[in-house]
Length: 211
Image 1 (cartoon, rainbow, N blue to C red):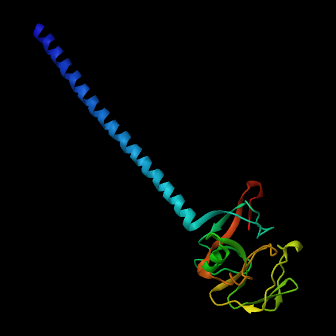
Image 2 (spheres, one colour; image 1 turned 180 degrees about the vertical axis):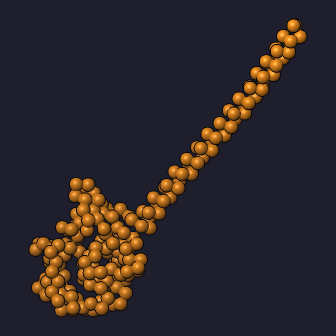
Image 3 (spheres, helix red, strand yellow; image 1 turned 90 degrees about the vertical axis):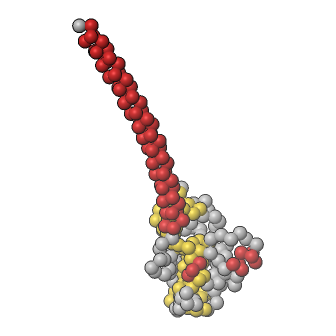
């Protein structure tokens, strides 16, 4: 009877010890799992940030309107979405509102920072363009421009000219103050300097709309 009691105590100690060791192993496994889960979550966040960065710089770019040259279509301080893929397989068309870079000489001559400009394409390669009494003509046809208001039509007139191959002619909707292709320091914009197409205004939210 005494021997059996001793065996039971021995078995109990062995069982408790084994359970303790197994518990320690499980704890180690859990700690490792937590570390791996944390690492996995960190990598997931990095991937999301990279995707967002890629979307912003390659696909869709939110850009703040700076200035009054596109009134009343675009207002200073609004945020617009620019589609950087819009002209991957096609060229800008008349009426498109685009984000573009002016020639390098423009920035140096005006002592302005190198930055994009938002303008409207009014003529493309091969088009002949001119203004008569403030009215725009393309290939001899009068162009209706409902986005213009009378007080914004002023500014330099456009002498008759043909747009070179691989270029577009851009104007601001607020012609009275816009510096655009009418100026010798700007001229027609090469297609490779067109960044993308403005798709919509997203801010202020109450004024969000498609372009």
